[in-house]
Length: 338
Image (cartoon, rainbow, N blue to C red; front, side, top):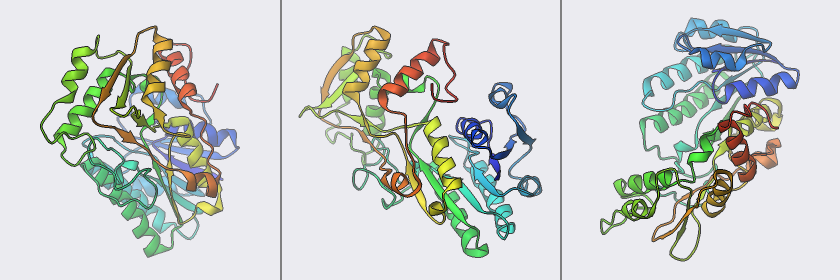
């Protein structure tokens, strides 16, 4: 197949491009006009038809879509970029809708934030969060992804465009996982939880739990092993960018994906007790062990993706942490699995 990948130099896009090429697909990619050299270097030397332009320009998108068999829309700006994310998805879905009679499929990359599964912001209706969970966007970014899903569905209804929606949990690459089991992350979650009365971390009596953590910590980067008062660990289910790329390969290649949506995440939630222990072994630092009267849970059930389209995540806790440490030491670039 000839596949257009928007955002081909992004965190997921550059890894997806590599997996497509390894499976003998022909790849065309788009990059935004202001892409820094470091991003462009991610696909340097690869056999990709790379096109620079603005995805909010319908004519540019039409040209990029011309002659391809499938489109995978990974382009995305995380943060306060509501208008950009809406406009780019609108024009990509329009161009794909116009080409619906010849496109095999359009794959839209959404986010678990549409539910959300951020229990430090809003408690999920239930755990684990699956595809049937109610959608309740809590930020402009999350809303932009939810509207993107609706634009994708609208294009399908109007034109018969064959679509797939993929929802990753927190996507990580490089050394980013190393910060997730630290005092800094725990303190940040607790502060967010206390600022959001609907969260699972909110203390109705006003107790600022992060002060207890900061008082016992050596510094913000110290590994932090957290349990609730009953000894139940906090847990976190992110998503390795290489696994996310594999999920998109499944979404492109499998006929069972058409017309469906799929959650994507790590093989299982990572316990903070295990994460802090492994991080301690790698860094040589003593972990802070602490009990709190609240429990943070971030999960993303992906049984449907496993059963329907053959998604097989490889990024377990030990693999991701050891790879992240190797990246930090300058020993490895995690475009592919070692």
